[in-house]
Image (cartoon, rainbow, N blue to C red):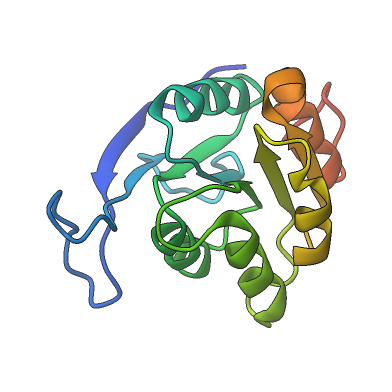
Length: 165
C-alpha cells in the first residue's frame, strides 16, 4: 500500500480565516491528503493536546491507511468535525476548551455528525463510564491499549484490518 503525501495546512476559523498561534488557544494542526480526490483514504480526526500522543496516534492510523486530521483542543476539534465530516473521530478526554466528552455529546446530538463513530481515549481508565454517557462508540485506555487504536477505528467503520480501504 502506498502512502499519500500529507501536507500541513493551517486550519481556518468559521469565517474562513487562518488560525494564528496567538488565537486564544484555538489553534489546530490539520494534515490532509494533498490530492483531496474521491479515491483518497478515509479521514480520521484525532483531537489530542499532547503532541507526543498525537504523533503516535497519527502514525498508527496512517499505517492502517487513513488520512489523519489533527486538532489540539476540543473547540477546534468540534469545529473541524463539523467542517470535514471525517469517517471517524478519536477524542482525548482532558482537552483545553471543550473536553472530549462534551465534544462527543455535541457530535452525537447534531444531525450532521451523529452518524460519525467516536472513539474516546484516556489515560484515566475511570473515564470509560463518562465516555459511555457522552455517547462514545468505543473507549481505549491510552496506557494499555493505544496499539489497538487502528484496529478499533477499523472495527467502528465496519472494515477488517486486512482490507482498510
